[in-house]
Length: 202
Image (cartoon, rainbow, N blue to C red):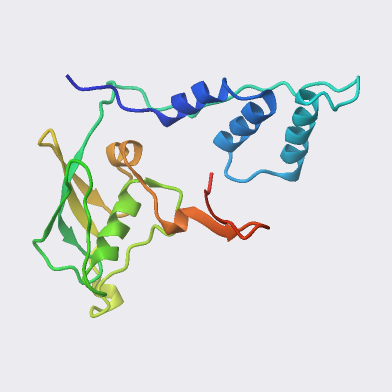
């Protein structure tokens, strides 16, 4: 029997209720927006002071509620497993007729420079959810710009169904069911103790 699809926002909401008030408030802001304003940071700091009993006697908590994104109605979604990406066209100089199969656990795509690894990755980033701003797909450099075909591909799932992907045409099943995380989705830096840290962009 198919299991209900995992909803990250429901999980975040449940987790937020276990956090101290100021952290729950901060989480609600991160869910609602990509960047935090100075005004929001001041509000978070004020909540922190209240939680730590460091605020003045007249300090008042901010009235707020964690507003979660609403999904489109319709039939309940179920978990999907992506099994293959095939019929890729208009992406770099990828050979026609190739199929990239995905294993049930871990799939490693490897090869020398120019083999097409990043081309397949660009299709996945364009089709699925990602925090990366680098979602463009490059065409074949050997073709004139006016002769570049629109990037397309076919995705196959474990239930035998297929979805035709067309670049810049959103596909709800791919966007809501799969996420792509790569180096462009994180901030890499060193702290004052020279400890290496990788932090996601929220």
